[in-house]
Length: 466
Image (tube, rainbow, N blue to C red; front, side, top):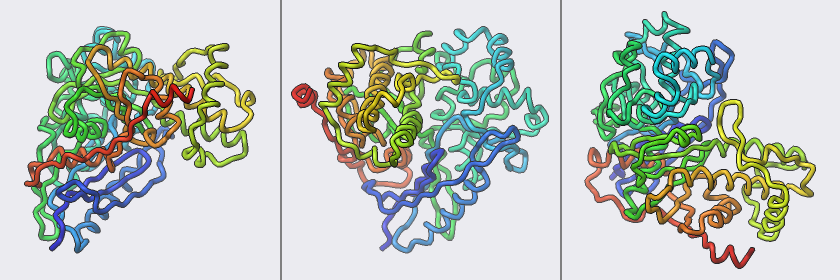
């Protein structure tokens, strides 16, 4: 008998993956691919939407033909802040613009001047001023820079819902995408902000449906339940909410390092907003306070610079062991010549002190890489503390790539001695979360209670080492 499974398409900016999970949420199959970016009309790098669509449909056909599995459901988790604009034939009208694309300062000024200023708007929408990273601002830009395209746009779909549309032809909107630093949603009023209606954008946004919604699709003589998709940050949180009841913060790491606290129900302050804090929703529409850092990107760039300086391969640093003696000496040096915990780059994103250092000051890549991790953890401590506040948090779980970096994890445990710090291992947490979100629609088995494997990092051990 074929094994009943759910197929999850997990779309990151770098890796596009498909997973098959069985009814106990054990991974049965996976495949991944990477695409070269293309350029939009302004010469900015962006996703190759045509190639993504082709891969999705081809891959679905391939996994449907696997004799060992019976696919009963499909769902999607993708990166956010990316709109697909569809005409009345359901075809994309523009490239999938990159959320890092520079935003015109004049248009930014026009928007915030029209709608009461930055402080008023950011507090209402729980969205720091991030330009293109506020996907609502992409719609605003389309209206004023490409009015003909704006008029032709019948529906604007965030990327998860576009992938859903490809398989179902159903147009819908999901709260995890709309409620995550888009600038579209008024958190206090629990509805779209007035500006969305005033700028004639609301009619282009399909109906909002629960994130657990599924639609039936028929493929190769099979009826499959197809979810509406989720923003990846919210999806990654779902397995932890299913597994733990004590208050915790999840540090979801990758290109972005996002501290997620579903136990902090306070609103945002102007100071928090200016430091890239935001609110988002769980798939059950509960508020989560979050802070974001672009640390995965910074780690990759600075590791490459270290490798070039010392004539080495940056990939080897990922397995570098933790050297407490080096850390102790570096901390003494840092105390004698302190630097700011962070600076902000031209995009307004915080970056660590490492960019202010010179590589000539280090005798080897081992010393340089340890200093890089010290600086990144100092930055992370500051960002994570912004969302902890007085919320009763007892545990800090680190999910994703940084959880496998023993230097980072030892330093993080030292930075938060009041918490139990764990490297949390969930096979593909984002994809698993997308599967759990539609559990009742395809799976009559109880959710397993051993989804998460934890590796503790003890501050008592660290204290003896240092």
